[in-house]
Image (cartoon, rainbow, N blue to C red; front, side, top):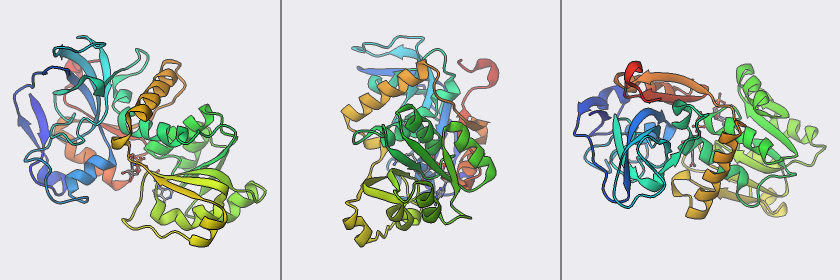
Length: 335
Ligand SMILES: NC(=O)c1ccc[n+]([C@@H]2O[C@H](COP(=O)([O-])OP(=O)(O)OC[C@H]3O[C@@H](n4cnc5c(N)ncnc54)[C@H](OP(=O)(O)O)[C@@H]3O)[C@@H](O)[C@H]2O)c1
């Protein structure tokens, strides 16, 4: 089978190559999926670039944790999945050497989730990281029903889902930050009541005006290092910051507003969701998908041969939406 692979970390164009490998066979409890689309997330590009660690976790890595396709072989003892099922995948390249940037992948059956028939496979390749992260950030710690929520980066891959999900979960008022008119329109169409430009406005001042000085109850934060100071100003008493991203490794938080307002700051990584949280998030997401309640945004589709371009597009920050790669030409791609 054709696969994209790297055996050292570095710039995409230098380290990614297309190789031929044996098609994997599923063992007990596993399924093999013919991958239609493979999702590229910032986490995949950071791992490949070596920005988390220059040391390779395995001698060879086929990148990408997200993907979707068709089950075409089932190992012994697998219940609930059959050949021909359309599925989306989670954690396919987390703690595993071979991810979804290949014609086939074998995963433990629980990491393949049935994709409702009304959802396209390219959308399925964007659920494992962006949609599950947004779903957990919105629904953790009692959720956001009746509460004011600020989604930082409300037009990002995670942020766009988080705005929609906050609306679906009954948030009282939703605020989103963006950096351009185009992103403002996207966050608005996702359901934000107020959109603030974090580059040109004094965020805390404007948000406090909009909330009559009360502030928001939860901030879903894409860049805690850049925004911590403003976040502590914008939170209401007993408010919380759910940080899933940071532009820098170290975060400085202001102690006085933190303690006087009883602010909670929590971090999570979607790869490490506990079983109960993951089951809940997948169940909720499946319901919304079946009911067609989410809008999805694919910014760019690439052939596997152009995987380095796909990585560069994600790294550039220019993509508004998800970037996906297909290992199959159009005529042979599973649908
Ligand atoms: N913890 C987890 O499990 C988890 C899961 C998914 C993603 N992440 C991390 O979260 C980050 C975003 O991922 P993504 O896939 O959503 O990326 P993305 O699609 O590129 O979206 C990021 C968004 O954040 C905006 N942004 C950047 N800096 C900002 C700032 N200081 N304040 C407000 N908005 C800002 C960007 O727009 P502008 O630059 O135009 O403002 C963009 O719209 C990445 O660092 C990723 O590694 C973590």
